[in-house]
Length: 226
Image (cartoon, rainbow, N blue to C red; front, side, top):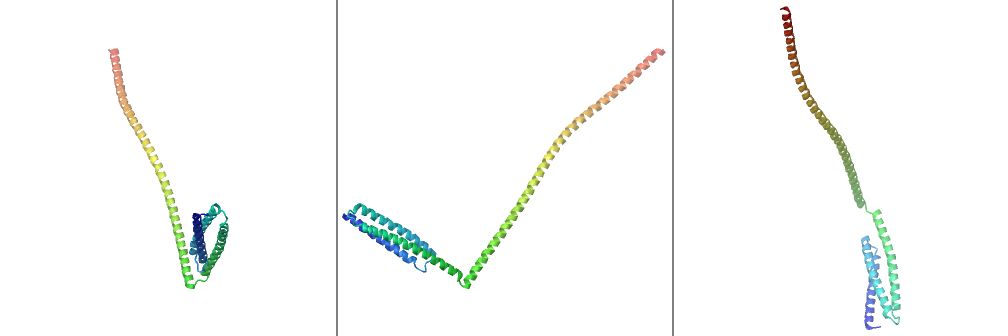
């Protein structure tokens, strides 16, 4: 193996060792009985990051061993690292499950065995929430009633507008009828005036005709007598 390859192998071994120590440190922290839910979330995130980094280092080490280790000296190290990685993964899963159970039991214990003052405070908070919910429900109901009333008023206004529109149309029609009637009356007046003048003319003609008739009769009588 070349000196440069040996340096790279030593560097990868150091990285793998640091990764193992980091994950073991996370395992130690997650087994703490006083751990909280937020701590569990943070430690899980750190574990995923460190596990990914460690797996990458082992993959690089295995690749280097296949490419450069002609004598097979690093094969045992690769197998050891793989086994350690599997053991760490299994150990973390078990510790994580146990930790979550511990946190869950602790939360239940705090819930059922809290002191009277805390219970009273929670009861007050619950009542306050219930009152707020009731108030919110009442406000919602009032708003719904107001909305329905406004809808009813709008419906009545719409009916009133329709009646006004119909009345306006009726007035317009009546106005048109009055205009027609006015025109008819004007024409009738003109005809009556014309008929009146004709009656006067006819009366004069009748008087003149009678006068002429009587004059003719007088004339005829005079001729016969004399």
